[in-house]
Image 1 (cartoon, rainbow, N blue to C red):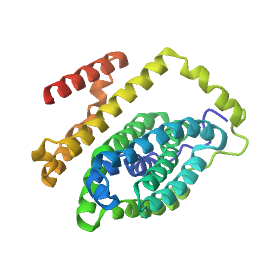
Image 2: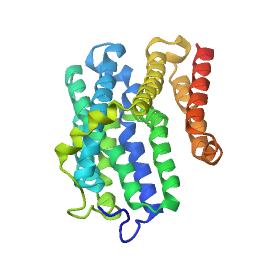
Image 3: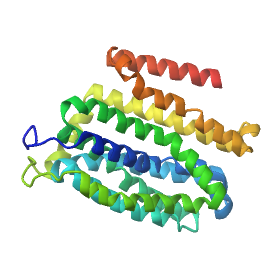
Image 4: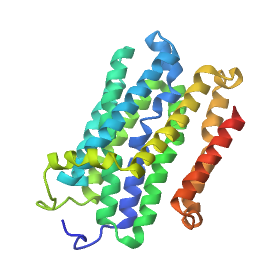
Length: 297
């Protein structure tokens, strides 16, 4: 594929679409964190058991990333986003109709696998089709949207579940996904035929070599640590207390919303943080996160 397409894609429309989709697709990982109690009540089990729906999604989501990257190289990011969005729409709608916990775990796994197609494809699209002068801003907006989804979707899910039930969270998500299929086809550009090098098997064969790189391994481990801490914190508070928070929906909502200012500040601080070397930024971030968790405990 040529290094530069004949004409760059419109940065504003593309960024707005991919940021919105990022919040919607990635946010599905966190929906059940706000639905543990109502789902447990309906399934006749405990909130702790319902957390398996989050675990199943997470493992399938991680596995889906391993497939999404090579598929983007072979078929192009728009094709992967389109097919993944359609599949995620169907799997999300299916979750809304489950009647027992084992089925919910299976369907959440399928939902995680299909939702995983989005992030690699979206970032690949930006690198290929957004002009370099807009690329940094676009990537910042999209990644910030995916991070903000962890809070925004939990807040929205809690509000919807309190009003019309937990099942509505999933069918509303499915409807929103379906409505975005047309903008994806309208705004995003297809990859020209014959524009990719090598076959699909060749792309998969290269992955073990990449995973043996120390820096990439360190990035993977740091991501696992951060995401595990984030999900564990919200899950522990929702299930185990403190009682003043667990039994108070307003307090839970306030706790979830309290992270929004920090997430909004991230893109605004990019020009400042960009002056620091990446290893130093990572070290400072882990130090601050560790101190915050230790203080809160």
